[in-house]
Image 1 (tube, rainbow, N blue to C red):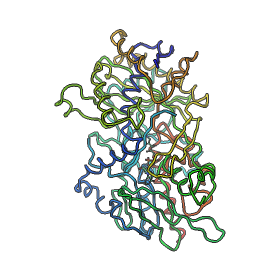
Image 2: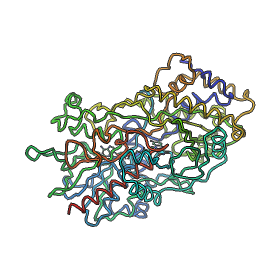
Image 3: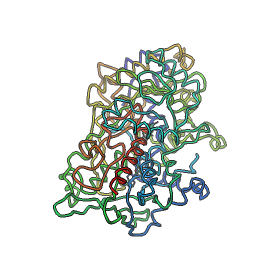
Image 4: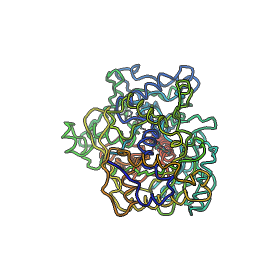
Length: 595
Ligand SMILES: Cc1cc2nc3c(=O)[nH]c(=O)nc-3n(C[C@H](O)[C@H](O)[C@H](O)COP(=O)(O)OP(=O)(O)OC[C@H]3O[C@@H](n4cnc5c(N)ncnc54)[C@H](O)[C@@H]3O)c2cc1C
C-alpha cells in the first residue's frame, strides 16, 4: 500500500520527506539493530561472536579462569550461594558485585548466549540480545542516568544509587568526540527552544546535552561483560550457552514455595541441574530481561493460572496474574534528513529533553556502512555493526523470511539507490513513559522460543500527543540556522528519492492506518518503530516487592529492566547497570547481616 508523507511533514523542506519510508524500510529497521528476533539468527549471532574470540583475548580479560561452555558443566552442581540467570546488562554487574564479597560463597552466572569479545567487526520488528553482556553488546551505546524524581519514586536509596552509577561510569563510560553533524543537532535543538544548554552531563534534566557513551575513543564498544573481568575464579563461574528452562521450587510444610535451583540445557540439549548450597540463605536471581524474566517465571509455574494451564505447565506454583503484564516499549519515530555533504558516522551523543515528554536524539552515518561499488570495496568497507544490512533486520520482512539471501538482496537494493539517499542522518524522538502498555505471553513451553509480546503502541492518546510535539520540534531543528549546512536548500535534487520513498510498500508489519485528518498523529502511528527500550512484565509492587523479591515465593528475585514501570532517563542502560550494582550491594549486605 502506498504511503504518503503526511501534510505536516509535507510542510517540511522536502529534504526531510523521503525519510519516512526509505528510512524505516531500508535503513533504520534494517540497520539500526544487529540482532535477532528469530532463534536461528540469534544462534548465529552468538556463535560467530563466540567463535571469533581467541583464547588469548579471554586470558587478557581474565575470563579464561571462570568462563566456561555449559557443555563442560557437570550434570549436577550444588554449592552456589547465588544463581544469576541471564548475563546481560543487569546480570553482569549484579554477578560481579555478588562475587566481590569474600564471605559470599560462590556465584553461578548462566547465560544462554556466547562470548562477546573478539568480534570486531504489534507488527513492529523488534530484537533481543543473546550474548554475555546482553543488550549492551548491540545497543547504540548512549549513556545517561535517570532523573532524581525517578530515583525518588522508585524508593531507592539515593546515595547508593549515586555510588552505583559512579562504579558503572568508572568502568565503562566515555566522553564522545562529537562530530559536526551532532554539533549542528545540538545547536539546532537549542535554537528550536530545547533549552538550557546543559553541556556534557549524565544527568537527566530538561534542555539539550551531550551524554556519555560505552564506545571508547578508538571506537571499541565496552559492554556489561567488562564488569566481570576482575572477578575471582573461586567466587564466580560463568557458563555460556546455558539456557535456563526452569526454576526449581520446594515447599516446607504450609510455607511458601522456596526456589532451590535451576535446570538448564547446553547447546547440545543436554540437561544440567544447578542447586543452591544446602543450609539456606541462597537465592536464584533472574536477570533475563524484559522478555526473558516473565517468560521464565511462567515456564516455572509462576504466572496467570489459566495461561499456564493452557500450556500444560504443572504444578502452578503461584497463581500470579500480573506476571508478564504492564510491558511497554517507548515508540520511536524518526525523520531522515539527507545531507548535501558527507556526514561522519555517529551514534546517539546529543539529546534534547523537552518539558512535554519527548526526547530528541540523532544518529548519522556516511552511507551507513554500505559498500557501494565492487568486490574490493565490499571487502574493505566497514560494516559498522548495527548499520550493516548483512547483520540487521529487514523491516519489511517477517523474521522467518530474513534469510541470508534476503539480506543480500536488501544490500544490493541499497547499493543501487542513489548514494546521496544515504548521506545524512536520522533525527528521532522517543516519548517519555510510555503510558500505553501491553503484555508478554508464552507461545510455547520451549525456553528457546521468543514469547509473544504486545506493546499496544499509542493506545493512550497522551503518547500520540507527545510524539506529535516531538516531531514538531524535529521540524524546527531541521529548519534551524544551525542545521542548514546539513539540509538541502533546493528540494528538487532529492525529489526522485522522495517519490520512491512515498511509494514504498510498508514499514514494519502493520497495516497502514486510514488517512487521518490530523497528519502528524497519523505519521506517528504509521511510522512507529522500537527504540528497544522495552521494560516491565515484573513490576515492583506487582510481581516483586521493594527488595525485588518475587511475591508469593522465597529465595527468588528479579533484577533487570522487567521491573521498571517506566523507562528511566532518555535511555535506560545506565539505570539497568546501576540496578545490577545497587542490588548486588544490597544483597551482599543482607547476606553479611544474616551471618
Ligand atoms: C539495538 C538496541 C539499541 C539500544 N540502544 C540503547 C542506547 O543507546 N542506550 C541505552 O541506554 N539503551 C539502549 N538500548 C536498551 C538497553 O540496551 C536495554 O534496556 C538493556 O540492555 C536491558 O538490559 P537487561 O539486563 O534488562 O536485559 P538484557 O541486557 O537483554 O539481558 C538479558 C540476558 O538474559 C539472557 N537470557 C534470557 N533468557 C535466558 C535464559 N532462559 N537462560 C539464560 N539466559 C537468558 C539473554 O541472553 C541476555 O543476555 C538498546 C537496546 C537495543 C536492543
